[in-house]
Image 1: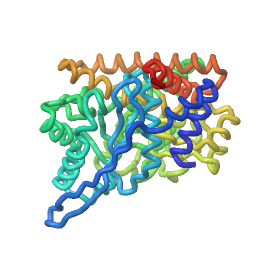
Image 2 (image 1 turned 90 degrees about the vertical axis):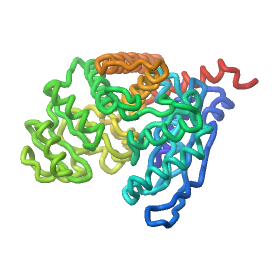
Image 3 (image 1 turned 45 degrees about the vertical axis):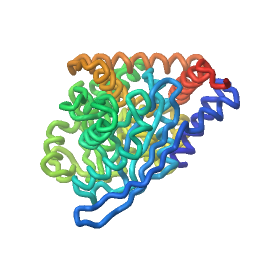
Image 4 (image 1 turned 180 degrees about the horizontal axis):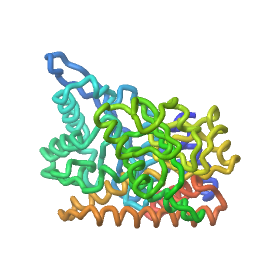
Length: 411
């Protein structure tokens, strides 16, 4: 099942739990606006190349729309639509005053030079500058983009609208980026894990963790788990996989990856098959990479008691059912990986105020926001007698539906 079908399915189930009016139900599903633009730029060799850029703005009932911009050759409109919709529910769950958006350019950033990437980014910004904005739609980095991309968007946008640091988040610190933003998603995953384990009278210390994906989110999550006394017994990324039943030395693995650009040949553990990390013997499994990695083929073999969804949509609905029958508790992506967008919100707030926070304040506020969201989800599960995923979706959909009705959508 693709991402859009799965997101729609979760929305339909949440709408049924809440007893949503059918007209409102339909209105909430349809995106507010879909933008598609042509981006033609000169390459360094003098030839010209054309790409399609797009932005899906899903909902603005609760505030400006918010979501990443990705550069990827196979940008699937359905997936982007699903991710924009997911951002609407995610920001509502996290209690941030935003709606959802997503976008990008159908190019392969690895095949472009830095100057070509800059030209593509500037042309894209020129085409959409009047449809994004501090109080309209605030982009952020995503797959294939980074803080440098955001700096270019900020500069190009500012040519039309004056200096506007709050128009994008995930910027370099020197241009108004927030301290703590880089580690935010990983740290949020660890806070979410702590809150969940606490419900069962457990803590991170001495629990065994398997982490699939060792990019930004996975490496930060592994570092914080290691610091808190948890045992990371298996780690994988696209370059390889490592296991150690006594716990991997995460700082040593990070140093090895920095030098070798790979997890292969790490001396502090044994190599293993990439796909085996998902079914490795552990207490907590944290998928931090791609969507759809837990499916009907491997779900029955998962040995973890808890799954923390740090990636977007890592669990297929079929796997969801198999895992719940096994008694596995899943903390859904819509909440578990919301640390990144929460600190993006803090960055936006700091830029609007022109007053920057210390990192301690950023992390303190992140923990406070995530704790409140966890308690809200728990209350929703209790009210509707449902699992954490449905509790989170019902919470998000209910907040957006309430805001839509209060604003007088039928007028």
